[in-house]
Image (cartoon, rainbow over all chains, first blue to last red; front, side):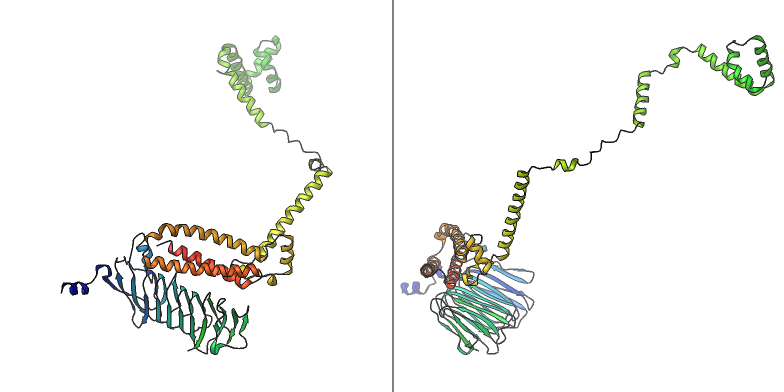
Length: 235
Length: 241
């Protein structure tokens, strides 16, 4: 009987603490987050406020968000310098028109329903990046080992950059997009343009790179996957 | 006797140097003319004072200082003589070099101007740090090729090698910092870091092998540069943990 009780009792090493806080914000608020390890999920919502909630695994990290001049800063690397901290799993809700700049040393990043000026997602080592329903003029997604998925609009005069060390990069965009493309997959040579393959797309360096223009080429799309493939999908 | 004759004779009259008829004539005129009488009184007072006063009362207390002051005033009023003008043609004589000196000077000017020109051209044609690894011999201008042959401009391969040395130095620096802090990470973090480093190292090895076979493979050079930059960034970002 006692053994059953101990089996279901929470282990202090895996106990979680919860953090939650709301910040009144303008529609074009900027979120800048640097996490050590754990998942980060950012969702756009139709409210003029930012909600930051997080589950902290033991040993619980210190979280000290700051709102300075229209930007919410959360820096767990700086706030926990020189101490051991467990994973922190964030769920953050921001106004639709926000700019989002999130970074983690390890863990998955997900951003959805954001149509601000900038969306940047950077994973130093391992983790997947998933960007869905994004409408921003500047998008940057970079990771080490892991997949990258982008589903969104390509704005005119926009700048879009996707880079991975190993994993799959999938880009789902509408057919009315116009962009100049430099896609490089030197190891696998697996560059699938799907419906965006046109005679203006040139295969260079024995198929390791594809360069060309789709539409009037008003925006710039750069995709680099050192040891993985690249695929374009119709949205 | 009129006033003029009287005034001319006053000094001799007071000194009693006139004969009796002249003295009587002066005396009569002074009795009738108040102007000449007044003048005679003034002369008489001066003569009397000269006879009565002692020399000590006439000489100023510090005669030598007075003379110094007077001398200074006189000297200050005298304009200094104008500086002697160099005779015409002396400037030419100052720069009158010998023939070997002139040749050596001209050669020095030519060397300096040539060096300045080369430095200017190199700066103008040097590719930016962003794209130099992607440059190849085929993208070099004719001028750059000529300069490369002469040795005044790095070839793309030389630029690449120089860049790699810089990157390796930065990687060594950040790697030392990572190794000092790595023991504080948990196992999951350490494993993820090691997997990524190994992945990058494999990539670097592959590109190095390709470039050894084909140094002209610019895409591999570009990707090698990118992989080394990724490694440097990975180390730098984990060095903060």
